[in-house]
Image 1 (tube, rainbow, N blue to C red):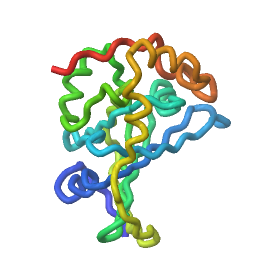
Image 2 (image 1 turned 45 degrees about the vertical axis):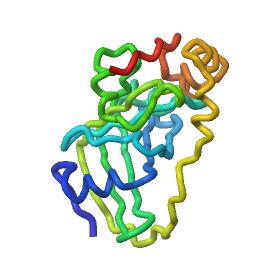
Image 3 (image 1 turned 120 degrees about the vertical axis):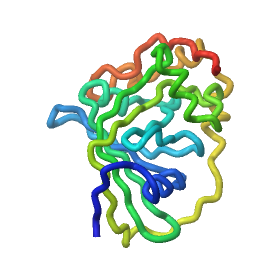
Image 4 (image 1 turned 90 degrees about the horizontal axis):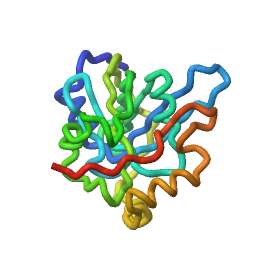
Length: 197
């Protein structure tokens, strides 16, 4: 039923890149810490960098649990489900890191997302994940669901923000600079968004 893969390529890569939503799971090292599970969407915000590396854009939001957990221990699992076509579930277990706006790698990584304008979404980090284990399973119990379109609410909410007002917004939220468990999350003040080359 399940199969382990040495790399992200061929049919596996095509499946991952065709999905409209995926999920990320992270946790702190503390045994009583808060496990986090997040849905991720927005067409064009995910990229396969190479056969062992994937990345996605971390947009503005009301918390930063994934960033905090990755800064503490790096562990992350990504999961995709087939909601149409043949049943399938793919998981990438690996180690990730948030690359922030003032990191010298930022501009090069952003080139992998040509269809996304980062300005109206309050892009705050690029999450880069190196795969340690890649597996698929049957997905026989996953229901059929149809994709209609991306929601426009995120863009309409954050496109009116400047770097300065976005930083001010982040300072008003309880779980942006620190996680629910008090771990360091998004470093503030927020550096300006570099010009796209």
